Length: 144
Image (cartoon, rainbow, N blue to C red; front, side):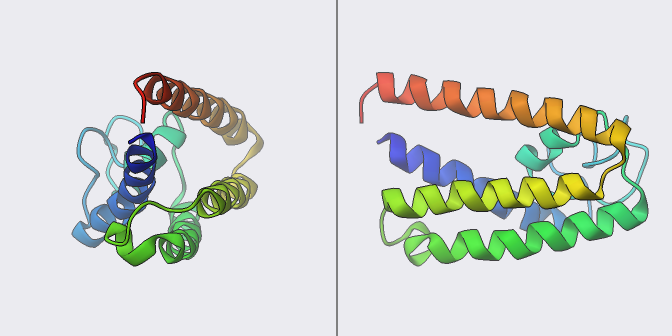
């Protein structure tokens, strides 16, 4: 059963970005991605992306480029999902490819940031990765 949760979390990350972007507002549960304290601007990304940009204020140009990057990689991840989750869980190979896509996305976004922003972003990436690993261990402990 843990593969379902993992797949749903991946889809939710991608879908959240789509919905929040389409609505033109911040994702639920916090300030817009790249904005501290709700300083305005359009919402970008889902909760996962919001966590990556916690403590970072992006310029309008950076936000536009981040949107383009997430759109590109979201499409690639969705292609790996069998029938948009209706066809069952992704294969182990598909999950590994999704992780590679996530790493490429993180790299491309990191390249857009200033040195100061990168320090915060890198810490956020490490925190998110640790949380993801803890969730996976917890789910594996509960059995499949």
